[in-house]
Image (cartoon, rainbow, N blue to C red; front, side):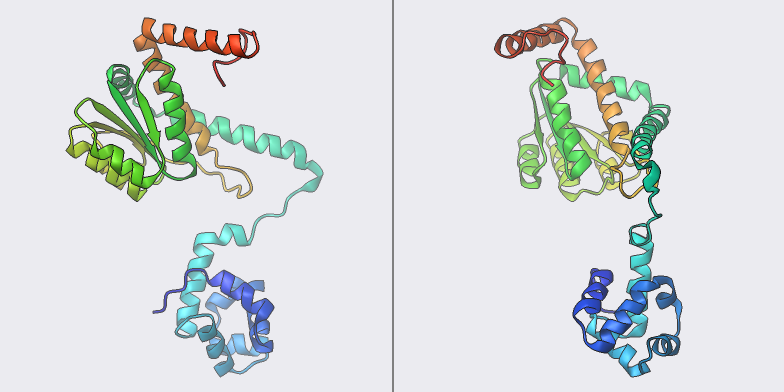
Length: 293
């Protein structure tokens, strides 16, 4: 079997730049992907008004070994990205209000469903570890997870804690290599299979660091960490809207940060006071503004 990374892109190029027969066949396939993935070669040839050998040559032009190989990659593309190839039409008449509802309702639903299943004793134990940890490392890779690693650093440093976030794979490994028993590692990965994060957690654990993963249960990262806070993404099928899982994951982070702040109590309050004093002196003197946000 050949190795075709993206058959749809190759079809799109063939429909624009291929020979006359290739353009005809590519347009036929793109207009009805399900049909092309299931129809016999004779049926495809007849509908495109070309010969069967022309269909075979077309498949090979796309990088496939033949028609069967082509159908495999086409079926794979439909299964993986079908929702992006056949999106439901937008109702333009109510677009504005629908967009607001789509974002807010899915965010609220994701937060409620996720927090309803939290194991609070585990989260409180994590908060206690963070509140007393001499050093904390936050790891994340990719859009959501890297954002969460950076945000956890943002939440913890203002409590007077020593914390660093790393989203670069090489730096994650380097920081993990100098971890000690005094180090706490918090790793984020929605999939649980971000290689750099999994490797860094495993390495830090070898050097005695306490490792915590917020990730999919049963994933590679979950198996690598000492403590796991299970997180499963909640999707609603809207391909145009950013994933509501971001809000659910942020809710978990905020719960941990709040519990950590309460456990540090006076130490946290003094750090927060200093930051507030510094910012209000240099910027706008308005105590109603969020703390450095």
